[in-house]
Amino acid sequence: MPTILLKNVSTIYQGESRPAIKNVNLIVEKGEFICIVGPNGAGKTTLLETICGCLKPAEGEVRVLGFNMVRDGVKARRRIGYVPQDFMVGPDEAYRALDVVLMGRFGRLGLLRKPGRSDVEKALEAMDRLGILELAERPIGKLSGGQQQKVMIARALAKEPEILLLDEPLSNLDYEARRQVAELLAEITVERQVSTLVVAHNPESLLQVCHRVLLVSEGRIIADVSRENLDELSIPAVFPGLKRNGL
Image 1: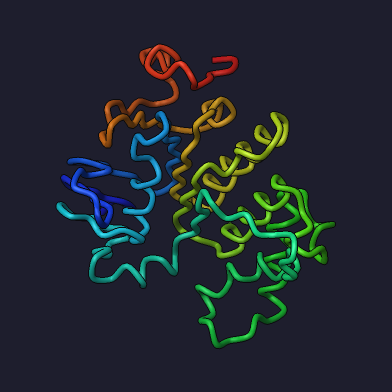
Image 2: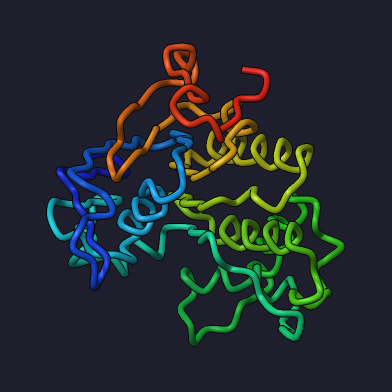
């Protein structure tokens, strides 16, 4: 069975009448790195939230790691690393960056178990790979937007997930940092055989390293192409706001 399977899935937000995603079919295999692009309001975030079980589909079937996400979403989410789009914390938040990254281990430990030495080592390793080890003792609220973004990515990696779902994880980073993080995500996808789905409004760095690109518009996946066949898909022609730097 694929790592992620969506069959004829439509999702409607509470209080809305129109589906945010409509009749979506998607198969994601183990170790695939997929970049999801499209304009604002296209349904990219809804797609991730439906996959991780944050939203229940109005129609269709969602299976993740073999679990039916309506019945067994809690079990699947223990094995998913998720970074939402809106995560920024205020300047008075006192948790250390290391504390926040360690929260990624709770899915494996359970909320009532205290992280041990090995958990701290996993958290520090994730921070080191993202180049933020020196921020471990800093309060998360005192960090810049880009630094907070890297902390949240490190938290997802520290979980040692089988699936990574990242919603605009590079938006607060400069060009060089976006390139480095995109390459790191590609490395981890291969090393750990993680299934990685990344939403990006400006995907230029990700398009250099991903395996597939999903183009989403008006709640539908209107194109699904491999990176090698990107020339068949004129992203700027479809969405002028999107960039394909160097491609």
